[in-house]
Amino acid sequence: MRAPLQQIETSGELPQSADAVVIGGGIVGVFAAYYLARRGMKVALVEKGRIGAEQSSRNWGWCRQQNRDARELPMATRSLDLWERFAADTGKDTGFRRCGLLYLSNDEAELAGWARWRDFAKTAGVTTHMLDSIEASERGRATGRTWKGGVFSPTDGTADPSRAAPAVAHAILMLGGSVHQNCAARGVETEGGRLSAVVTESGTIRTKLAVLAGGAWASSFCHQFGFRFPQASVRSSILSVSPGAEGLPDALHTARISATRRGDGGYTLAISGRGRVDVTPQQLRFSSQFLPMFLKRWRSLAPGGLQGVRSGHETLQRWRLDRPTPMERMRILDPVPDRATIRLTFARALELLPALRKTTISAAWAGYIDSTPDGVPAIGEIDPVPGLFLAAGFSGHGFGIGPGAGHLVADLVTGSEPIVDPTSYDPRRFDASVWGKVADF
Ligand SMILES: Cc1cc2nc3c(=O)[nH]c(=O)nc-3n(C[C@H](O)[C@H](O)[C@H](O)COP(=O)(O)OP(=O)(O)OC[C@H]3O[C@@H](n4cnc5c(N)ncnc54)[C@H](O)[C@@H]3O)c2cc1C
Image (cartoon, rainbow, N blue to C red; front, side, top):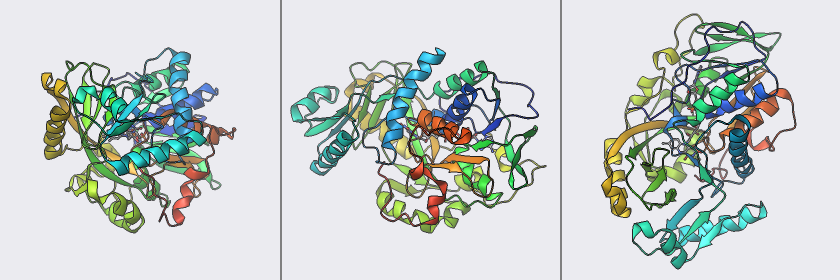
């Protein structure tokens, strides 16, 4: 089942040339195209399915600095401002609100970890409040329980995954860019060792600059021109319930369950970090590089099935540019949710938040979360194809930092002062080992 998503009508004929082509209409691709178009560039965005229909509509909607790795914190902070600025500049509603995020726990070790992060965050100018037992129990009163402690991060927030990417795509159109749905990019052409065109199923766009924001499909696309991008995805299952529960926090995390208020007044419910690994040829190829990540997270992972192989996003196949590719056979990655996880999530949510007993499940879905070996995205120019920039591997954090990532991509593409230091995101870093460098969630 697909996650709720606003549909938008997009451009017709493909342009023959563009100043820049963006491949992929998830939150990263749309923001990259938006910031390029704002600089007066003629931008064409091509999306093989529908804008936002893969990870970017399937997530919780959290836009957080809380517990962020040091490598991503500056981008998270800038992104919160950019979510607000986007609404002010365009008048478009992504559902972003700084509602604050509430974390509750009865585990001393977890609370100590949050306190350590609070101390680190202070050095980066980020405010977060540790809650003692009385404060945590008061903020978490909807649970009817006493908590040992918690954290409240007042400057964090949520945006609405069902409308954010379409809203940004609409803004690209208003700036004179074009957005093409049901239009897969099959590959790239080069001239004199540099990018010269993007080849799509509907024709070729001549361009010297392109961005590959293909989410879970990025590595198999890079494989076509021999760039080794270690990437693997995990299937995460999630559900939403109808409106009707009052008095709950807007965004709540506990070890057993997380709940997020949706734009329609319902809630999204999920178990943090839990996922199934649907083994694919690509995962086997990169398995040794993902070992440190796996050792850190294996407790929340379970073996999956053959869905990943059937989906084709992690194929090692090489395809031709004049024939349909796996991307045209799978317009929208729509994995089947894990039924046991959905049942467990709902049962835990009813137990923790009794007000949810007035609600019913309105939808359940899954998404493939694409990750890099160190859990930090890959953003930067790709060596074998100068002019082509990679922006993928957002490792479960890409929705909240989508605006900052898109801005950074536009900075790199245009050679402008980068909004944040891009060093940590360099796609070439995977030539070295990631032992000891895996980010927390
Ligand atoms: C269950 C779940 C919960 C999550 N919760 C959060 C959260 O609370 N906060 C947070 O920050 N992040 C969260 N995430 C992660 C977040 O959703 C992703 O990191 C983010 O959406 C990635 O955006 P993207 O644009 O890189 O990829 P995607 O949204 O996957 O978009 C990539 C797009 O590229 C298109 N594409 C691929 N190849 C081609 C091609 N060759 N030609 C044309 N189009 C192509 C695809 O069709 C797709 O639409 C969650 C993810 C999941 C699945």
